[in-house]
Length: 228
Image (cartoon, rainbow, N blue to C red; front, side, top):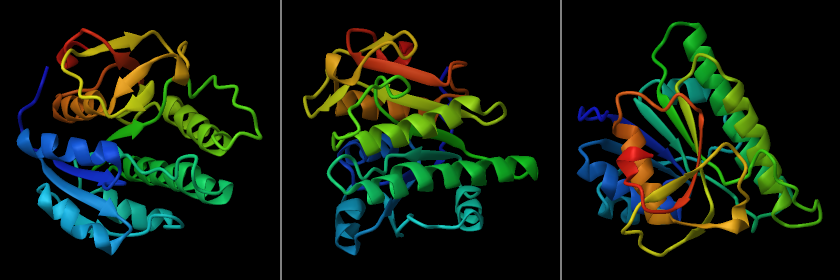
């Protein structure tokens, strides 16, 4: 069931390719979007798609700073990543440490009885069971996501959802998606359009509640987004 009420949305990593596709969709759905970016040169790009830019380097932020920021929003979307192109240190600092600090802030807010936003984490298909070679440049990213996703699944009183698509493409998806049971798939076995991911972000932002299962593994398919 979709709740049409406008929500205050914070996208962390707002200049990433998927975030740039999702932002106009969220705004079209009636949501108020603030986009966290690190590079001031990206401000005009964010403003051009209708969001409010927030310039902030999230690496190294203390948990108290996260608490002050997150409690002002209804939905937080983690789309930030150093990926597999940055050095291992930068990848662990962003994809693992910063994400875990934001989750600790969520838990602290919950424990104090303060407002806690819904939390959507962009991950990848097979994150919990990957067997990436430690010498592979993808390994720090994969290990970071594994640790963060396990932490998310261990939460019992936070409204969280891991979105785990297959290998991402820029092909526009006009059909829909397909849910992969559990975490049985592997990233390179199937492909997923970034446009489908953006549609799912918008769908899960607008719903009155998230799926009971905290991990949604999916690829391109035929099912409407509303049925995933």
